[in-house]
Image 1 (tube, rainbow, N blue to C red):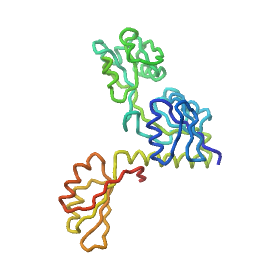
Image 2: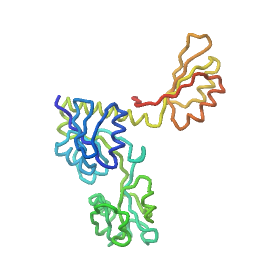
Image 3: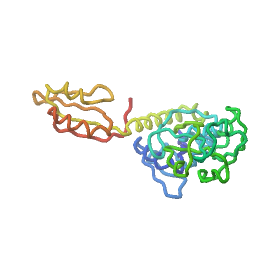
Image 4: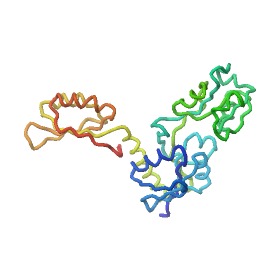
Amino acid sequence: MAKLILGLPKGSLQEATFQIMKKAGYNIRSGSRSYLPTVDDPTLDLRLIRAQEISHYVELGMLDAGMTGHDWIVENGSDVVEVTELIYAKQGMRPVRWVVAVPNDSPIKSVKDLQGKRIATEAVGLTKRYLADNGVEAEVEFSWGATEVKAPDLVDAIVDLTETGSSLRANNLRIVETVLESTTRLIANKVAWEDAGKRTKIEELALLLTGALAAEGKVLLKMNVPADAVEQVTDILPSLHAPTVNALRSDGWVAIETVVKESIVREIIPALKKTGAEGIIELPLNKIIP
């Protein structure tokens, strides 16, 4: 099979994407100015490209596949195969939102109040479609950056991308409405998707990436438990499925293991210890494959 040319987002999503790829089993190396990172998989050929452009180049066939936001697929109107959703962002495992934001003291309360106003945004097409869907006519101009500082001196409102809303609040802006909620997607060129070898590679990549994301924030707990305390222990343990229980050679003891959220481990280990559990081990996870 010819190498699969895969586009990865350069910029704000780059570090998070590299981390997810690593957990999926792909070790990537890239210089600070390099657009051609290397990976320890001879069947992959990587390109670092702005997320805004990836769907365009996937559609054209310059890339066989890529990872980019659903928002940029919509903005570009790209005709691509959306293989799978990958819920992660720059600051956490959550969707991001394109929102209408205005100064705190603005009289604008809803999308209807944007009639005749001036709006700055990087997502011009997305914004124009949103306004048209709501029967609003307004002037939409492309913003080259620092969009938050343009209201109210240069524009009446902005449409900007936010994950937590902290940057908007820091610039004395409030959210009026959500234009689009977006997550990262693994996408494929339609011709590449019809190629059996490339499709297999893309599907394998999707499986490993979703497995890596499923393992985020989870750990494996293993312990030895007196046989007469199994029911007490399993009542304490939330699990992906039923905990695995195996008999030990020592009479009267069993081994229990299960996957739990890392955030609750500190709460349940003392309770497990009180039931008589011993040799409790907490292990990090890279992937969970259903």
